Amino acid sequence: MGGSEGHPRSTGSAHDAWATPERRALRELVADFTAREIVPHLAAWEDEGALPRTLHERAGSLGLLELGFPETAGGVGEHLDACLVAEQLILSGGSSGVCAGLFTHGIGVPHIANAGDPEQIERFVKPALAGQVITSLGITEPEAGSDVAAISTRARREGDEFVVDGAKTFITSGTRADIVTTAVRTGGPGHRGISLLVIETDRPGVSRSRLRKMGWHCSDTAELRFDGVRVPAANLVGAEGTGFRQIMVNFGAERMSMAVQAYATAQRCVDLTIDWARSRRTFGEPLARRQVVRHQIAEMAREATVARTYVRDVLARWQAGADVVTELAMAKNTAVAACDAVVDRAVQLHGGMGYMHGVEVERHYRDARILGIGGGANEIMTEVVAGRLGLES
Image (cartoon, rainbow, N blue to C red; front, top):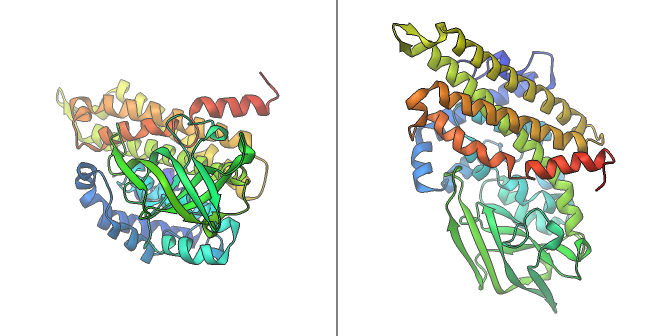
């Protein structure tokens, strides 16, 4: 596909941080991995509703899961490297759904890595980075979504254990996860009463049920229930009562990752639509000969390019330690808006084929809808920006 595996319009100039020799080699590795290990099987995984464990193991053996984690936890590289992997996986014919299911460790264990407990790192983080353990993050509840401070799942201390009761929903990789880094209430009301606790899913009292979604079909999602689950106090991540702050710190990485997936999905749909317009003939001519089609594709390319440029700029400043909370929210919304517009036009320009199950742009259309909801909904991002501008309600 034009541009999908390294075209300059998708990967940046030779002088930027995304195009160093090492990152070009990483991009080639991901493109090859995607072509061999993902594309031939993706339709079947979509029908099955989950990714196989072997995919995690193969990604781990290539070092793709350790990128962006601190060296003290067995990681290497910067968050940019992890973003590059997700970007190239999508550009090479994968999907944001694959990213969600394969890279769930990116939201499941950073809190543990950052807390720095050597024993927890050995038990939970390193096996996840090797692809041997599948992890999830359990925050959202049936009665508490974006309002993290309102969670009600309770963990009461009994000697050297916590006893956990409650429920979590919309948990990515929840049906396959071996461990769930779970937000629990160990104290009083509000954010100061929240802690993080690693819960192994094979413990008595843990039950889970699969949820069906509009998109991301290959990424399994579950509702989890905890009924008197006994968890060692040694599984507490960081100090008791610091869970809310830990969650907020990692939201930046999650939002950046979703912004990258959004602009990469947009670019992939641009590439697919260019190829379609060149090959599809109507009334004796390729679609690409029609001005109305050419101009729509040009606009799609503009939106994808602007989103990519802005997101990468914010990422660079965020990695450098700048205060870019406002810009992170703007970047996510900018990329999501571009993706929404582009996938819609891609389906339209593919005509009837764009509406057929199994056609790639149809899958991207469905998958893209979650990007404006997950990791902080569009409306929450807008409220973050408004608050940072001093527009208090």
